[in-house]
Length: 201
Image 1: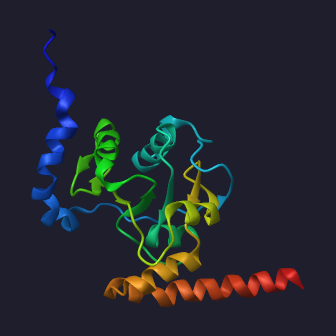
Image 2: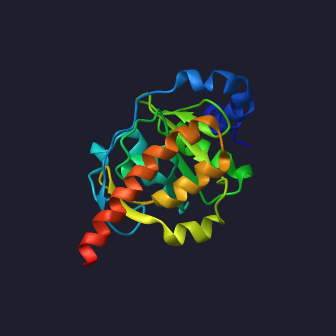
């Protein structure tokens, strides 16, 4: 029998050490997210040269190749829809049971990333991605995915949770930082509503 190579079990070894790094996870976050999108279709398909993609965009592309459905949520998704804010990580809601988080870890590690907590990973450029398995105050992934917006982000077509659903989730979570974001989101929602009314006249 051929002995296993040492690197074959790397994701499993890393999984055992995730909890040890959880306390320091928030202190190791990387660059702020300020990318702006354009309207698009067909979530997850690449329309850019893979060599020019950022580590985060390559990770998003790999989710599509693995057949893992996802949508961007939280403040990272709000920023993509025009909310004037910054965030230190990108929240991605994945259509997977939480027990399969090792699949996500394997994708990150293959691309030079590092686990910071069970759901949080530092990428090779210092940016941070946070995988979400459940969203407070929202319906099942399937239902929200069907109503998600489709945008072009970093040359990729992705699905993004609409502002009104982001607002509801943050309102229902009632965390201090989420409550602080509500006025910003509400202001943009109101502005978009006025623009849409003008177009329909």
